[in-house]
Each structure stands twice: as C-alpha cells, then as structure tokens.
Image (cartoon, rainbow, N blue to C red; front, side):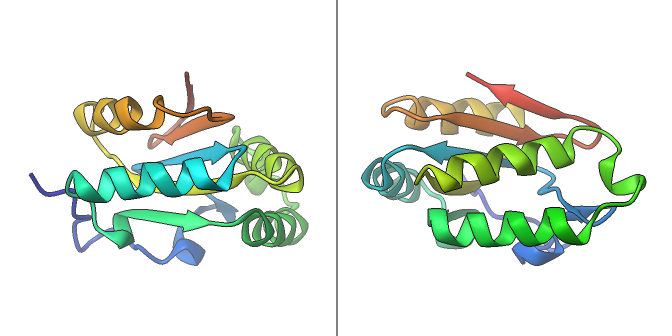
Length: 139
C-alpha cells in the first residue's frame, strides 16, 4: 500500500495554506507532549509504508517559530475565516509547552484510521485532520 502524496499536492509545508493561514489539506497535524513518542510514531508509520515526506517531524521550536510568523503575517478578514487561525494558535500554544509534532499525509478515512491506530499507542495532545472545508479534532 502506498501512502504517497499525488503530484498535484505540495509537500512543501510553506505552500500548505488557505488565505495565507497554514492549512495542510489531506494531512493530520499531531502534537505529542514527549518528543520520543513523536519519533516512535514516525518510525512505526514509516515501518508501515510511509516515507519521510509523508510523515514529517517538527520540533517545538520549529512549530512555535512558524506559527508565530503565520499568525502575525495573516491578520486580514479572509485569514480569520473559519477555524484555521484557531488551529494554528493551538499549535503555537502546544509548541510553547514543548510539544513535538508530526505532519502525516492521510487523505482518506482508512488512512486516517490506520494512522490513529499508531498514534494512540502513545500520549498525544491533539490531532487535527484538515478537510477541504473543515478541521476535525480527532481523539
């Protein structure tokens, strides 16, 4: 089974936006209080067929910096439409508390369920699933 991202969707995190706010359509953004748990989930997913581009690790420092910049640069009406800015704020808050993150490509319900089976093996703070018109908080 391939978890590869089709060529028409960017794997460049800086290009994953909607009205300027970070919005990785087809991905899960998962925050882990402990970096070693995030790394373990990444290893387990890669053992199950993901490649590094489809299961990217980000440190708390990287996420805090990117989220602060994203929120500061995108203050217009369209940027604040929907829940995207609130999700980025949640990412920033978790990063400030030291959480590590995985950005996991899981565009279908089946791929999301499989990823969650691995994620749920360890404590995690939140998992956000980015749909075309909504952000779903998974438990």
